[in-house]
Length: 101
Image (cartoon, rainbow, N blue to C red; front, side):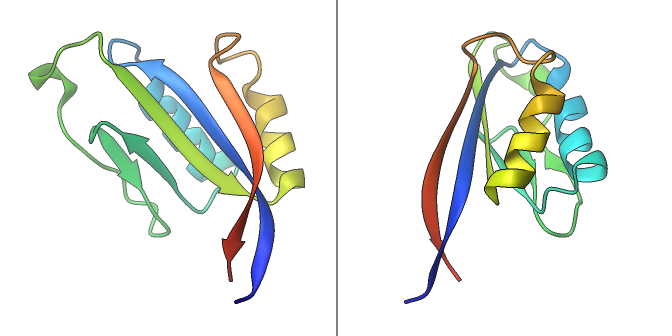
C-alpha cells in the first residue's frame, strides 16, 4: 500500500460559538482545503464544497464541537498561521500521520 505523510489538525469549539460556519467557509474558500469533518453531527463539507448541517438551535448550545482536517505539512502550517489569532490558546492540536494514496 502506498502512503503519504500528512499533518492532521483538530480544533475544539463550543456549539454556542458562532465561529464554526465562518471557520468552515474560510478553510474552503480562502485556504482551499479539500475537506474537513465536524464531530457531533453538526455539519461538514467534502470535496464538493457544499456545506451540510443541522440547525444548532435544536441542540444544547454548550456541547463541544471538534473540527478535524488534514493536508500536506506546508499547507497546514500556512493555515494555522492564519488561524492562530482566531482560535483560543490550547484549542488547536496538530500531529503527523500517514494516509493511503
